[in-house]
Image (cartoon, rainbow, N blue to C red; front, side, top):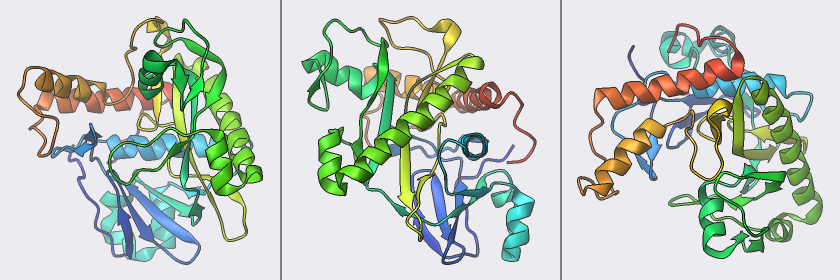
Length: 306
């Protein structure tokens, strides 16, 4: 199945990110198109991962609809025929639209990522192991890697254009945005995380942590935006293989990261651009991992399409 490295639609292109192209539809709507590009260690690989973009779009669509009663979002539709019916100029571009495009309400994004951590992993574990803190705030002593955090922790972060995001405190967000909005963001993040975590648990998946993005629409309504509870924005762990005290297997680009880490360990890649060529087996394994995440979360196979 042919992968899509980049979409080119007859709409004004607002920005091209590591994975998505964002197009302007009208004053109130945008079209998000998830390509099959993949990045690791902040570098976009040359080879796309087949069906990755469709997985990201359709998992987000699943969650936006399921969580509509928890918090409003920017989601309108991710149905290709419905999108093309609203934007007839896209008819010749069905391959780039079907399955991987999402029509959304336009918002003004909040300039912070809202991270919720249910388990101690990733950058949080790295900071804790070094100093016993998260974003400079103390955590209980004696925690192990992948230990549960109960209650979950809210860990906002700056949005970095290049390099890594920076974990910051709630007070820093409150200083930048005002305490009422900062509090609303925190409460919304916890509500969405808990609802998603509880559903995923019934599907045999632990959502260890996740990041949310929010934006305000023209009416001033705060909405959940971008992607939500996907393998790219979250750590999904198989519950039947969970064992605290070590890193966990995950439903994301772990096969890719493992391959690149091995190249770095034996000096075949320095971790900088240009990226190494990915062998077919790594591309296939990564694609299958994303498809398995979709099946686990939604309970169905990803349909034929992109």
